[in-house]
Length: 113
Length: 115
Image (cartoon, rainbow over all chains, first blue to last red; front, side, top):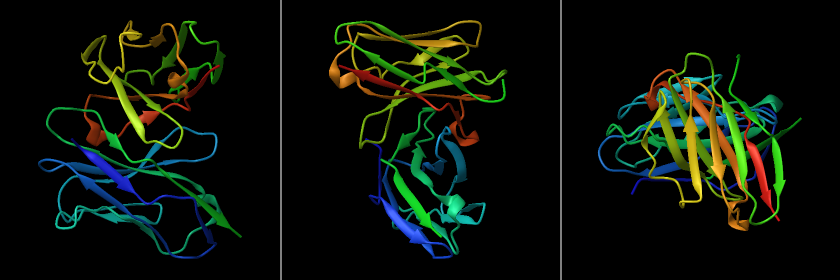
Protein backbone atom coordinates (compact mmCIF):
# COMPACT_ATOMS: atom_id res chain seq x y z
CA UNK A 1 0.00 0.00 0.00
CA UNK A 2 0.89 3.66 -0.13
CA UNK A 3 3.26 5.02 2.48
CA UNK A 4 5.17 8.18 3.34
CA UNK A 5 8.42 8.29 5.29
CA UNK A 6 9.77 11.56 6.61
CA UNK A 7 12.75 12.39 8.74
CA UNK A 8 12.20 12.05 12.42
CA UNK A 9 12.39 15.06 14.62
CA UNK A 10 12.59 17.05 16.53
CA UNK A 11 14.71 19.40 14.45
CA UNK A 12 16.17 22.49 16.09
CA UNK A 13 17.82 25.23 14.04
CA UNK A 14 19.01 28.75 14.58
CA UNK A 15 17.24 31.62 12.87
CA UNK A 16 18.39 32.18 9.26
CA UNK A 17 19.69 28.61 8.94
CA UNK A 18 18.97 26.46 5.88
CA UNK A 19 16.25 23.88 6.35
CA UNK A 20 15.74 20.49 4.74
CA UNK A 21 13.11 18.00 5.87
CA UNK A 22 13.35 14.77 3.93
CA UNK A 23 10.30 12.93 2.62
CA UNK A 24 10.16 9.79 0.50
CA UNK A 25 7.10 7.88 -0.62
CA UNK A 26 5.89 4.56 -1.93
CA UNK A 27 2.87 4.55 -4.21
CA UNK A 28 1.51 2.93 -7.33
CA UNK A 29 1.03 5.16 -10.32
CA UNK A 30 1.55 8.89 -10.14
CA UNK A 31 0.51 10.38 -6.82
CA UNK A 32 0.08 14.02 -5.93
CA UNK A 33 2.37 15.16 -3.12
CA UNK A 34 1.78 17.68 -0.34
CA UNK A 35 3.34 19.35 2.65
CA UNK A 36 1.02 20.34 5.47
CA UNK A 37 2.03 22.46 8.45
CA UNK A 38 0.57 22.66 11.94
CA UNK A 39 1.44 25.77 13.92
CA UNK A 40 1.07 25.64 17.71
CA UNK A 41 -2.58 25.58 18.73
CA UNK A 42 -3.87 25.50 15.15
CA UNK A 43 -5.16 22.90 12.70
CA UNK A 44 -3.12 21.44 9.87
CA UNK A 45 -3.02 23.63 6.80
CA UNK A 46 -1.79 23.01 3.29
CA UNK A 47 1.65 24.55 2.77
CA UNK A 48 2.42 23.49 -0.80
CA UNK A 49 1.75 20.76 -3.31
CA UNK A 50 2.95 19.22 -6.59
CA UNK A 51 0.80 17.07 -8.82
CA UNK A 52 3.29 15.65 -11.34
CA UNK A 53 6.94 14.75 -11.70
CA UNK A 54 9.43 17.63 -11.72
CA UNK A 55 6.81 20.11 -10.49
CA UNK A 56 8.01 22.46 -7.76
CA UNK A 57 5.58 23.56 -5.10
CA UNK A 58 6.36 26.77 -3.23
CA UNK A 59 4.82 28.96 -0.56
CA UNK A 60 6.05 31.28 2.23
CA UNK A 61 9.66 30.76 1.13
CA UNK A 62 9.36 26.97 1.32
CA UNK A 63 9.94 24.78 -1.74
CA UNK A 64 9.68 21.10 -2.59
CA UNK A 65 10.32 19.36 -5.92
CA UNK A 66 8.52 16.18 -6.98
CA UNK A 67 11.33 13.74 -7.86
CA UNK A 68 9.91 10.59 -9.39
CA UNK A 69 13.30 8.97 -9.91
CA UNK A 70 14.09 9.12 -6.21
CA UNK A 71 10.43 9.03 -5.03
CA UNK A 72 11.12 12.08 -2.90
CA UNK A 73 9.54 15.42 -2.04
CA UNK A 74 12.00 17.10 0.33
CA UNK A 75 10.97 20.38 1.93
CA UNK A 76 13.52 23.23 1.88
CA UNK A 77 13.79 26.82 3.00
CA UNK A 78 16.83 29.00 2.60
CA UNK A 79 16.52 31.08 5.77
CA UNK A 80 14.17 30.01 8.54
CA UNK A 81 12.46 32.31 11.02
CA UNK A 82 11.19 31.76 14.54
CA UNK A 83 7.65 31.89 13.14
CA UNK A 84 8.39 28.73 11.10
CA UNK A 85 8.39 26.67 14.29
CA UNK A 86 5.68 24.06 13.72
CA UNK A 87 5.08 20.41 12.88
CA UNK A 88 5.45 19.57 9.18
CA UNK A 89 3.66 16.63 7.52
CA UNK A 90 4.41 15.13 4.13
CA UNK A 91 1.43 13.47 2.41
CA UNK A 92 0.34 11.88 -0.85
CA UNK A 93 -2.86 11.24 -2.74
CA UNK A 94 -2.91 8.27 -5.08
CA UNK A 95 -5.21 9.95 -7.61
CA UNK A 96 -7.16 6.77 -8.28
CA UNK A 97 -10.43 8.41 -7.32
CA UNK A 98 -9.54 7.67 -3.73
CA UNK A 99 -9.60 11.01 -2.07
CA UNK A 100 -7.92 10.12 1.18
CA UNK A 101 -4.44 11.37 1.92
CA UNK A 102 -1.65 9.19 3.29
CA UNK A 103 0.47 11.12 5.79
CA UNK A 104 3.92 10.77 7.26
CA UNK A 105 4.46 10.90 11.00
CA UNK A 106 5.32 14.59 11.09
CA UNK A 107 8.54 16.46 11.91
CA UNK A 108 8.60 18.99 14.72
CA UNK A 109 10.72 22.03 13.84
CA UNK A 110 11.90 24.53 16.43
CA UNK A 111 13.73 27.70 15.41
CA UNK A 112 15.70 29.49 18.11
CA UNK A 113 16.55 33.20 17.86
CA UNK B 1 -17.88 29.56 9.98
CA UNK B 2 -14.38 30.77 9.28
CA UNK B 3 -12.72 27.44 9.91
CA UNK B 4 -13.34 23.82 10.84
CA UNK B 5 -14.51 23.60 14.42
CA UNK B 6 -14.22 20.48 16.56
CA UNK B 7 -15.61 19.78 19.98
CA UNK B 8 -14.71 18.96 22.61
CA UNK B 9 -11.06 19.92 22.33
CA UNK B 10 -10.18 17.44 25.06
CA UNK B 11 -12.05 14.41 26.35
CA UNK B 12 -11.10 12.01 29.11
CA UNK B 13 -13.31 8.98 29.40
CA UNK B 14 -13.34 5.69 31.25
CA UNK B 15 -12.74 2.46 29.39
CA UNK B 16 -16.02 0.98 28.20
CA UNK B 17 -17.89 4.30 27.91
CA UNK B 18 -19.21 5.70 24.64
CA UNK B 19 -17.99 9.05 23.29
CA UNK B 20 -19.20 11.41 20.59
CA UNK B 21 -16.89 13.77 18.77
CA UNK B 22 -18.31 16.64 16.75
CA UNK B 23 -17.09 18.42 13.65
CA UNK B 24 -18.46 21.61 12.10
CA UNK B 25 -16.95 22.01 8.62
CA UNK B 26 -16.54 25.21 6.68
CA UNK B 27 -19.89 26.31 5.30
CA UNK B 28 -20.35 25.09 1.72
CA UNK B 29 -17.69 22.39 1.89
CA UNK B 30 -19.26 19.23 0.56
CA UNK B 31 -16.49 16.83 1.54
CA UNK B 32 -15.64 16.00 5.16
CA UNK B 33 -12.91 13.71 6.46
CA UNK B 34 -12.03 12.09 9.77
CA UNK B 35 -8.47 11.11 10.66
CA UNK B 36 -6.83 10.08 13.88
CA UNK B 37 -3.29 10.47 15.10
CA UNK B 38 -1.92 8.21 17.76
CA UNK B 39 1.13 9.31 19.68
CA UNK B 40 4.25 9.09 17.51
CA UNK B 41 2.35 7.96 14.42
CA UNK B 42 1.14 9.57 11.23
CA UNK B 43 -2.40 10.56 10.49
CA UNK B 44 -4.62 7.53 9.92
CA UNK B 45 -7.63 7.86 7.60
CA UNK B 46 -10.93 6.82 9.15
CA UNK B 47 -13.81 7.87 6.88
CA UNK B 48 -14.91 10.55 4.47
CA UNK B 49 -18.26 12.01 3.47
CA UNK B 50 -19.33 13.44 0.16
CA UNK B 51 -22.49 15.30 1.10
CA UNK B 52 -24.24 13.12 3.65
CA UNK B 53 -23.06 9.80 2.25
CA UNK B 54 -19.87 7.96 3.11
CA UNK B 55 -18.40 6.29 -0.01
CA UNK B 56 -15.34 5.07 1.87
CA UNK B 57 -15.61 3.60 5.35
CA UNK B 58 -12.57 1.39 4.92
CA UNK B 59 -10.52 3.14 7.56
CA UNK B 60 -12.85 2.60 10.49
CA UNK B 61 -10.82 0.35 12.80
CA UNK B 62 -13.70 -1.71 14.16
CA UNK B 63 -17.48 -1.87 14.38
CA UNK B 64 -17.24 0.17 17.58
CA UNK B 65 -16.59 3.19 15.37
CA UNK B 66 -19.36 4.90 13.41
CA UNK B 67 -19.90 8.30 11.87
CA UNK B 68 -22.73 10.25 10.41
CA UNK B 69 -23.28 13.56 8.72
CA UNK B 70 -26.51 15.49 8.43
CA UNK B 71 -27.57 18.48 6.36
CA UNK B 72 -24.27 18.33 4.50
CA UNK B 73 -22.88 20.03 7.56
CA UNK B 74 -22.14 18.73 11.03
CA UNK B 75 -20.58 15.30 11.45
CA UNK B 76 -20.40 13.12 14.54
CA UNK B 77 -17.87 10.37 15.12
CA UNK B 78 -19.05 7.90 17.76
CA UNK B 79 -16.83 5.40 19.52
CA UNK B 80 -18.68 2.78 21.54
CA UNK B 81 -17.20 0.84 24.45
CA UNK B 82 -13.95 2.79 24.29
CA UNK B 83 -10.64 1.00 24.74
CA UNK B 84 -7.28 2.40 25.77
CA UNK B 85 -5.95 1.96 22.22
CA UNK B 86 -8.58 4.47 21.07
CA UNK B 87 -6.60 7.23 22.81
CA UNK B 88 -5.50 9.62 20.07
CA UNK B 89 -6.11 13.02 18.55
CA UNK B 90 -9.12 12.84 16.22
CA UNK B 91 -8.91 15.32 13.36
CA UNK B 92 -11.65 16.51 11.07
CA UNK B 93 -11.08 18.24 7.74
CA UNK B 94 -13.27 19.60 5.00
CA UNK B 95 -12.87 20.65 1.39
CA UNK B 96 -15.04 22.15 -1.32
CA UNK B 97 -15.15 18.85 -3.17
CA UNK B 98 -13.79 15.35 -2.63
CA UNK B 99 -10.59 16.22 -4.46
CA UNK B 100 -7.48 15.98 -2.33
CA UNK B 101 -5.48 18.09 -4.78
CA UNK B 102 -7.50 21.09 -3.58
CA UNK B 103 -6.12 20.67 -0.09
CA UNK B 104 -8.05 20.10 3.07
CA UNK B 105 -8.78 22.55 5.89
CA UNK B 106 -8.31 20.82 9.23
CA UNK B 107 -9.78 21.52 12.62
CA UNK B 108 -7.61 21.64 15.74
CA UNK B 109 -8.69 18.17 16.76
CA UNK B 110 -10.17 16.40 19.76
CA UNK B 111 -7.66 14.81 22.11
CA UNK B 112 -9.27 11.65 23.47
CA UNK B 113 -7.79 9.90 26.47
CA UNK B 114 -9.26 6.60 27.61
CA UNK B 115 -8.33 5.68 31.17
